[in-house]
Image (cartoon, rainbow, N blue to C red; front, side, top):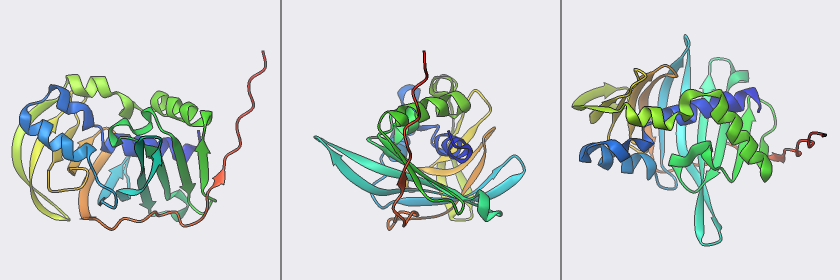
Length: 224
C-alpha cells in the first residue's frame, strides 16, 4: 500500500477508534457513540493534529453517497495538510458504515501531495484493507473495547470553543472527549497515534479531490 495510504488509514481509524465502545459502555457513552458513527452527508469536523513531534490540519467529512442494490454507501474523507505541502493528502473510503472504516471498504481514493488522485476498487480494496489492519494498531477494536472506562462528563475547551464532553480512557493509555454536539462526536483525543483538538465543524462538506481519479491497475497474481 502507498506510504501515504498507510499513514492516513492510521489517522482515520485512530481518530474514530472509539466507535465500537458502545457495546460495553454505559448509556451515556452508547448515546455519544451513535453520533460518532452516524455522521450525515455534508457534515465535517476539522482538527489540529500532532503526532511524533510534527503537526498539521485534519478534516473528517462525509462528501458523497451512492446506491448499491438496496443499500446506501457513503464516501468518508480524511484530509491532512502538514507544513510540507508534499506530505499533505486526502483519503476517501466508500463504505456502508463509518464504524467499519477500512474493515470492509467498497472503494478507496487517495491523493498524496501534488500526485494524481488514484482509485482502488474491486479485489484490490480488500488487499489494501488487510494491509492497513496489519500495519497499524488503530484497527485493534477488541483491545480498545475491553479496556474502555468512562471517566465522566467534563467541560473541555478547544480552538472551536467549549463543550460538555464525555471523557473516556482505553487500556493502551488513550483518552477521548466526545460530544453529541459535534459531527463525528470527537472534541479532543490523546494517545499513541497522536493528539487531536477540534477547530471547526459544519454541514457543507465537498470533496477535496476535484480531479477525476485514475484507476490503479491490478497487481499481478503471484506465480506458483
